Length: 110
Length: 113
Image (cartoon, rainbow over the protein chains, first blue to last red):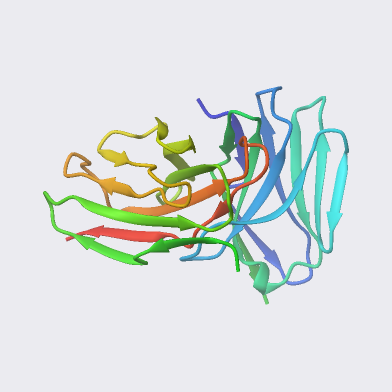
């Protein structure tokens, strides 16, 4: 049973465009929602994370939008760059669980 | 520099052999995890350990074994009972609970030859 649903599976964006990746969760016990970025052959690295007491968090070109009532959150990458090409994973976490989405492969075309 | 070290980066195994993947952390994290990554399947939890000398099975533990004799180390053995071991294996650690974020290692790619 998948508890964090991530979409799309893959995404192609032109340089300078906005990349948007969406996630939906089921477990209302989740109180931590991180996004990880993974380059080929490397381990995932924490990109940005949010707690459910805020609706938005911005770090540079990366923004998480969080909708607690809809149990949805999304990652927006502004002014996407070829160096952003990677696989992105969302996750939902509680003390007992950290459940990952299946990942989105982002390709930013020059 | 604090972090997680996985070794080796690449590993080749003959069918019927057991192999052990190393994972060492110097972050003073209590919890450690092993994940398997296959194309299009995301990250699947194999085993995790929240304290020394204790560990629990994850979603796909069959054919794998672990030990946690030291806080810093959490080796994974891929046994001959694992029928499809070719994959990318990731070790991670977290300070306490699963909602404080993970630090991942750089992974070990295991190939059965």
